[in-house]
Amino acid sequence: MARTSLAGGATILHADLDAFYASVEQLLDPSLRGVPIAVGGGVVLAASYEARAFGVSSGMNGRQARQLCPHLRFVEGHFGAYTELGDQVMGVFADFTPVVERVSIDEAFLDTSGAVHLFGPPSHIAAAIRRRVRDEIGLPVSVGVARTKHLAKIASQVAKPDGLVVVEPERELEFLGPLPIRLMWGIGPVTQARLEGVGIRTIGELAATQEWVLAGLLGKAAGRKLNALAANIDLRRVTAAGRASSVSAQSAIGRREVDVTVLSRTFGHRADRVAARRRSAQRAGRTVSARVRFPRMDSVMRSITMPAPLSATRTLAEIATELALSALADHSDEREINLLGIAVSNLVPEPGLQLELALGLDDERRRPGSPTGAARWAADRSVDAVRARFGRDAVAYAAVFFDHDRGVPDAFRELAERDLRT
Image (cartoon, rainbow, N blue to C red; front, side, top):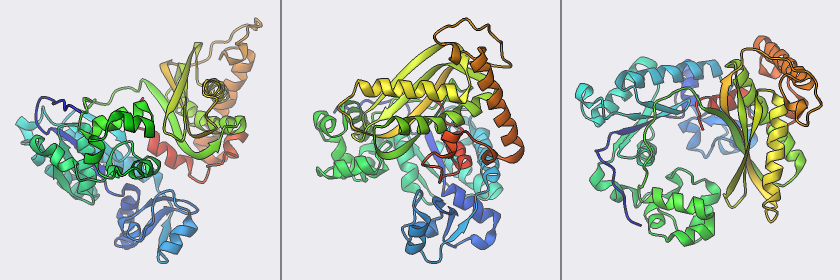
């Protein structure tokens, strides 16, 4: 594959706080430093590096984690502290450059091309950021510096824990070639196993593989994308944060047979999170999208634009379920799914509700101002008020409460999604 070059040097930084949730717990309680700890209980939400040395990892069952590490200490998550400290770290980044693209609560890309005349080369900026985050906030952060976003992210992973790796343009492919494919963006355990099953274990081997071979293994779109990234072809630019143009929620559900109950329960949970975030910002969206991913990693999305903006939980869940069923009908040969997601875009302000007369229209129950829509609008805001006073778990819709994956607290999910934009 031909390599496309970008103008300029290694000016993109990817900064990633090390074992963030566990590191915060160790910061709050110094007696936990150097001790294998896990945030959570029934499920490991995050593990310290000391726990990872025993094989403990995020998403692991608590019983299995204790078997691997008998001295493992479980601690409750301090979600408010995660948000506060994560925001403080982003403030440090902003002191060096206004072009900061926050991709999660604990990581961000920075474009330092306009800051070198003030703070020196990007490598110096990265070192200064690491010192300030350590000295002022007390947390370790690893930084990768490279010419592209994909390479900067890989470099930060190589730098862990608590390190700095700079990849100069002239040695990019030399650096990438011998690294394991698991470090690449978009390669999870399933894709890794599929590639390694045909002898593709390093990024260099992936770059040298013909696209048609990868298309047969992973699907045409995924194969082309991974082939390009392995050759460090990544034209994406760092984009400074702005007002989100859409809000989404998605998560893997394991290999599940296609079933309407799975769809409705899962979308009920995702819609609850998306809708609550939109209502708190007094914004609603006219376009609803549903994403379905199959075990082969191919995914399909369906969208619909409604005549009026929506923020009602039940309405969004119903629409997403119908969109997913439509997508699945076009892929009748697919018997299993492993990820579902919902997104709401075309956002507009929603300071209040304009009531409508009942006219017997086909979509009336989904119009916010209809009798049904108004009832849902009022019920959602009652739920919001109870949660604001007594916590998110104080009240929930039945489909959300009985959802199969409630082992992970909603507060943790919301932290993971709060900075994602689509």
